[in-house]
Amino acid sequence: MPRLNSRYPKRWRSIQRVSRKVFIANWWNGSSPPLGGPFTLSPERYHQWPKGNNNGKDNFYVGYSLEKTCLKTPFTPHAQRPRQAYIFAKFLKFFVMPNYILQDPQGVMENQLNDDFYANLARTDNITWLGQFKPDGMPKDPAPHPPPGITQAGRMERPAFQRLIGQSRVLLGIGRPGLSPTPYEALCLGVPFINPIKEWDQKDPENRDKWEAQHDGLVFTGVDEPYVYHVKNGDRDGVARAVKTAMETPIERFIPPHMKMSALIDRMKVLLETDWRPTAQVQMEATKYVFDG
Image (tube, rainbow, N blue to C red):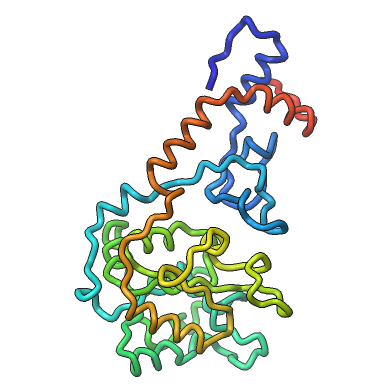
């Protein structure tokens, strides 16, 4: 970014200081004060998302890349992987919160932590279910536990976690957390992801512009089977089919082109080499922001 220079009028020097200090990184789909818009740095290409889902459309897409760290983890050939499925959920409470992938909207399933879905698939299809779930936010008495058939993998350092994911045949999302890097990491390790669709247009259920998913980035960039399986919440048969298909359908490493390190470097060059002063002036006037630095 240009250096401060006394030859510019005081007004311009003020704008220049602003342009160096008010770039705000916002993980979510929206802009951040004080200037918002192009001074908000985003991890996803919100400008390409459909209208109604693109509150961050004016942000600067800087993104990120997992390429270097992912490629440090050796690729495990599919034939050498156990029949292992990893459940992507950080907390046990995600199994009982709204938008859980197996949640019955009619309320038939009263206790989702006792659901036998995973145990049944473990028995009929010889699947080992693994996950790491913290009990935060759950009652302590009785001690919380994952649904039957799921084994707690225990805490581990990041390299060990990456190896565990890379030895799995599928990564199952259950609704939360949203927009996490983990599904991208799994794809880079050759592991397909099951992406829960939490909301959709009941009259037009296949209209993706109306979908809200655990990972919208994978919906709106058009990543599909055999890499990503999009399954609507409550569709237990659909989840089972996706798990079985993904287990038997190998994929190689997959890194979306815009998430390669070379693409990230190109965007960083634009960010660092652009003269942001004119844009800062426009945004300051639009937001009535006064810089007092």
